[in-house]
Length: 170
Image: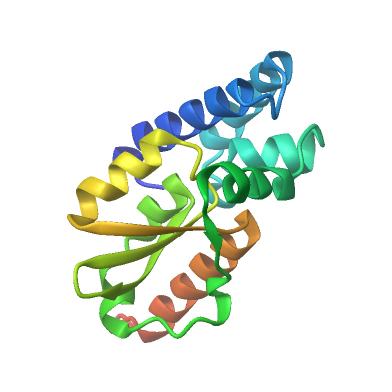
């Protein structure tokens, strides 16, 4: 991940963690342990693993990702989206910056007039919502999704881009 996106990644995770504690989805002690682990992963430059939510849910097993999504549905009135098989236009794909998407665990996947559709696993992070609201300059319809959906989509996008990139002349 480009170093210019590290502050965004840190802020997104920090504010997500604060909201998880505030909404009694995790304990403060668990958050502190997960934050330490996140620093190690970020230092190793592993974008797919650079997620506080993933550490809490899948390494430490102190939180279920489904519980976070259910909270977003019940309390934030969010819908859900699985973008892995969604037909995303080439225009939207070209505009995507995978590093920003990894840093925020979010993907803008469609646009209708002045509405943007964004799938995110990090809706509970105000830093993520604020970032995309400024970046997209329009109304956003937010959808909750899982870390796996975001990661699968971004990895496929990166593979597609690598396959269509001009080959160096040797």
